Image 1 (cartoon, rainbow, N blue to C red):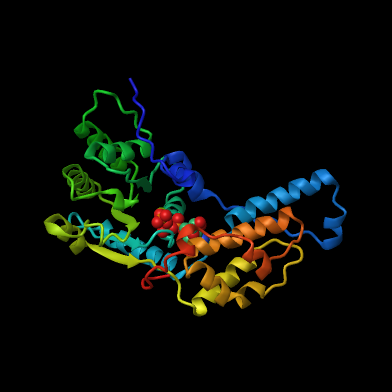
Image 2 (spheres, rainbow, N blue to C red):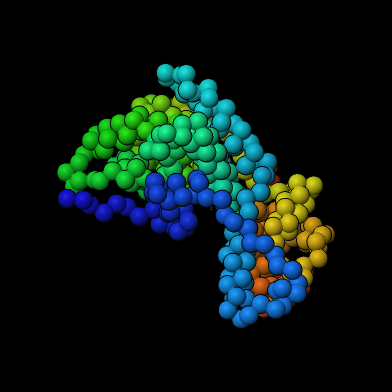
Length: 340
Ligand SMILES: Nc1ncnc2c1ncn2[C@@H]1O[C@H](COP(=O)(O)OP(=O)(O)OP(=O)(O)O)[C@@H](O)[C@H]1O
Ligand SMILES: [Mg+2]
């Protein structure tokens, strides 16, 4: 009898990544960027074609692109290096923690590392289509050991029988990971582990046990991990001693911020947008978003979709003024620091 598994909740995009099918789709997809039609051709489109053309551009603007920010670069470079080092280690493997405030790009950086590892593996072993080089799970709120084990099982598509105990699940997960040459395991939302509670401390031990049993590089991501208590106490020290930390944070009002905005502007597919407008609004955009990449993406994606739907086909300061950013950006200023 197959029981239903805990729902990871929250973001539907994250949810999709926590199954093998969803992850593989993400790891292999190269989202097509729509071509901007010549002005006359665009004006001459019949209504049906125009709707399809606009829908494509709206879908593109709702994603935009992943910018190679310093955080993405550091997580990918460090993660790849650790994965190589760990290949020959029989015990005491090292891991990576990506830590920072909410919506500073932790999941994006971690999943880009996973995608890179997956692409390299597929290239190196073209005949091993059933391999699972990367596992991606999220820690559910108030996680217990069994919930952690079940998240692994769910990703791998292992059926969970009602009678299965945690040892059975762990054995099955470790077996599949060994057989399918898993080399990187991403564990997101690690702040949901509350090691101040007994169940939370045991869940953290379960993760540690998995990291000892599976010869893979573990990557943890979560909100301000050092403050969540994961790294304190005897158990925490063990983790801290073996993990490299990459901190994410808000951008300063500097060249990296302008480069980020210019990259996003370069991916817009709008007919009347004047290139250079958004980088020139760098100071304004920083005030609006406090340098938070999540808020910036929200603002620019929203304005770009609006520009297609209302036909203005450009983004100006007035258009940006009309869009509200998230509540966090409207109120508290996050602490600077970390890799942006
Ligand atoms: N390098 C990047 N390029 C483009 N967009 C990015 C990048 N990093 C983050 N974003 C965007 O910023 C938003 C927040 O990013 P992400 O979800 O990775 O942050 P997070 O730190 O994991 O957030 P949370 O704390 O809520 O888990 C997303 O919409 C994401 O698409
Ligand atoms: Mg995240």
